[in-house]
Length: 294
Image (cartoon, rainbow, N blue to C red):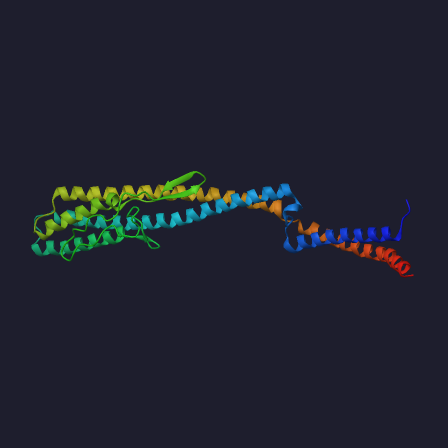
């Protein structure tokens, strides 16, 4: 077959285009530090990378869920701990108030402190995470209790519901975050209201009231134990997810990221090949053009 000038010209241009495309591709990889820049680069690895990125995004969302849940659990624990201290002080007062020799003035002073303790419990029951009440069930926009009027320790009825607030912490896994004030605070509030009424009436604190205080304290401790167990579970789930996220990121890096040292070496080689191709093809193309002009 006769090799014409046109054929030489076309082959030279084709070779140049191939070298230019290869050079552009490696330049893009070095600039982006990514091996997979577009789907045609490696369809199988691109599919794997998309799947890995989706899985990573899901795990990162679970981590955000856990972080939000931890804020709620930590705030609940703090509130319950403070409420427990208040009810312990109330019990100490109750033991003193059970003494029939206390004066009327002493009982009134004690009643004032009990009233303040009841207000403290209402405040702790109204703890929030952000703008949401923690102990009102699903009624997160409403405080569970309203303080009693001055001179009373009898708070309002519980204003929340029995709603169970849950968080998704892993694929197919949810956990309960909350306890409700009617379960953990109400017994203590009822005990304080009864103790206050006895003191205001000038009577000794009864054994029944002390028993109610013990019940209220037990309810607070039980609530705190539940919250503590949930905090531990959240911490364990967070640790597991963080490990999984690191593994997923390594996998994604293996799939997507370019070996930069190798890519820079290839880039230098491609540039040398391209320069050589330019010089060689210039010698082929130029005479062909001159012959054409003649």
